[in-house]
Image (cartoon, rainbow, N blue to C red; front, side):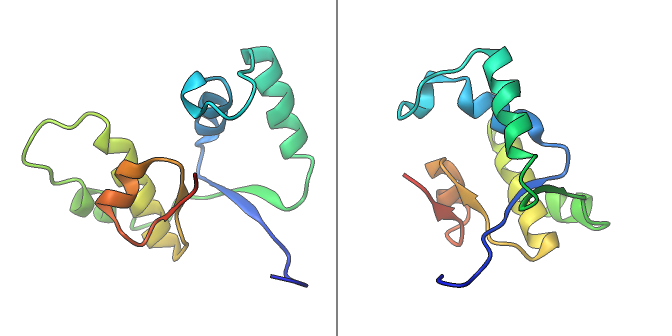
Length: 112
């Protein structure tokens, strides 16, 4: 990726996702932050012009409904389905830490 500009985009108004990740012990490889510290990190991220929010596409709900068709109760699957739908509508690659997203859609890039 030499010479390429690296960009970090967040889906729609999903700022809570970043905040949740940096304040939970589940991630395990970083210092768990307080909510106040998390907001400070969040603010620093968005001072960088390469970090921004993407708006939801017009067909998001249709795609979301198509992806979220589990025959069994799956409360945690809603977020995965929405993220996959967002990436599909926006023609983006989905990068995630959650193995369940990778299992649901093999094209998602799993970070470990």
